[in-house]
Image 1 (cartoon, rainbow, N blue to C red):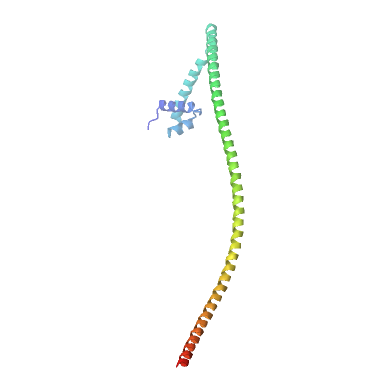
Image 2 (image 1 turned 60 degrees about the vertical axis):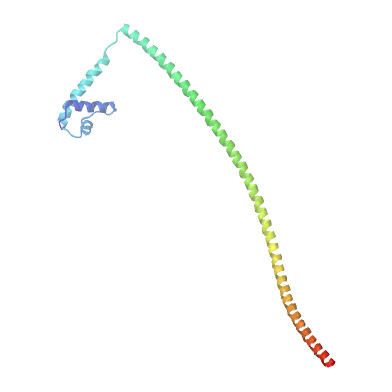
Length: 192
């Protein structure tokens, strides 16, 4: 690839615009290759051109033009100050609106937190009440379970008694039947 003075000057200008000092090494790194002697000669021309450009800055301004420049600068300064104040006032207004909006949001958030805290307290009170009721219900369930157990035991006893009585009744009926049979036989014998 043929490296031209124009290309080297272009890279030097780019580095300078970026605030990087256009050294031989920096320019060579940007190019990717090239001899230091070629780059050095092109950079010498570039530096001379830069000095020539800067020489215009050292020109002395005539008094008549100096006064006009001062008036112009004063006018520009007043306009710039006016624009800056307008921008500052506009920024202050936006800042104030933002502050008021944020304060309103913070106030709403505080209200929401207070409501949630009250609801949490109410929920906690309800939970405490429900826990108390559950405890009472558990006690009542224990009492009822004990009563059921007692009644179950009494029913078992009564069922056993009923079974025993049913058995005794069956025996009594059997004996009665036997007695009637004997009585019937006795009546028949007497009648005969």
